[in-house]
Image (cartoon, rainbow, N blue to C red; front, side, top):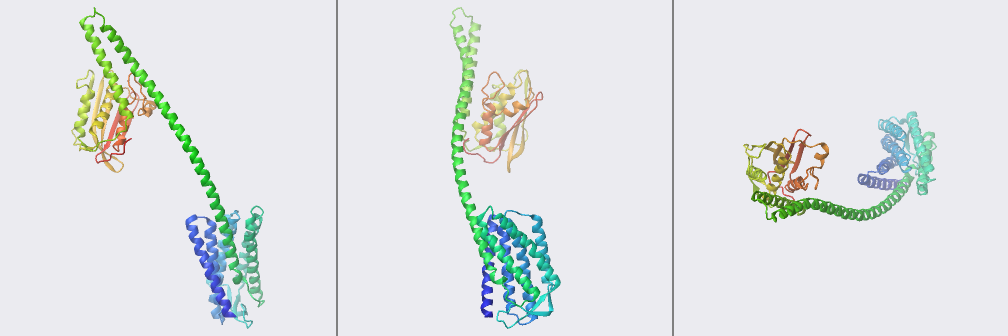
Length: 482
């Protein structure tokens, strides 16, 4: 009889240990506190059941005391985890109760390990499976006090769970199993204290709450998965609505951009065309003086160049920027861009251009045509920002973009500068503060810089001039077309 009971206890301990490992792993994936509390409860029960099995085979008090220490260390640990688990599944977590329970359980575990809970001088016939009697050490007063004290928070947790069943009927089974487990443990405690010498049941029914609570957790897990599936479907539907709304928004933005572009083109084209028409009308007059003819022809050239620049800017902004891989001498490229922007004449009236490019500047990876176009736009903007004259200073320096070495070309003009609003919108397409211009210059510069893996920085204060820094990496960092 004893061997059969002992084998059953070892089997129960194995099942409880497996459940503990399973829910411990589940907690590692889900990070839900009730999983780790239940894993601790099952593991502690496995230890307590093992201690009971060892006690059942003890033939003397000396053999029984170590087994009883293991048994009650597991029971105290199980009591702490039991309370936390009940409060979590009842969704009535009280941190003070949990801390107090674990404190009491920890004290009981320490006292059991130190041998303070049992009196080896007195033996009682407990675990009497064969009805032959077996020497087991009795509780000390401290053991009675600690064990009885732990019953109180356990009863509180069971009561909270029963109250919760009014709103969640699926918790009724867990509440009933909790009450049964606590009642059996209380009975065994009374039997142990009063030396009733009857059969103890706790270790033999410990598997019931383990299996019952597992069923409850699996049900909660299944319900949560179903809720997640519903929410996933709802999110998918919301995503579809959002995608359709985004498509409509993109279409609206495209129409708005087309409208804005049309307005810019109409404004920028109408004025040159009117001027050209007037100039042509003047050239048709027979009595026109030679000097007037030259003036009108100059106007035609100027307005034709203006229209050509407008078309080029629009084409440059509209087409995807796909840099051709190569290496460029940045110092030479800057000097060339300055000459082209200044019309091939360095002696611009009232404007002085200072180049500080003596510092050694390595070649940079990039598309020469695109970089030259961007630099020309920056120089052109700087010159137009100084209608009454000033100084344009251009310097090169080493810097970095992310983790890559880069070169920055700084263009500083002594114009009137920008206020905060203008500086914020300076790179927006079609934004300009000049009477003539498309507002695409810096927008194109910004796209060219980003296409090469660089950036454009603008530092300006109203009345203090503007510094535009064109930064490109030294190595090959060309990105897909933008």
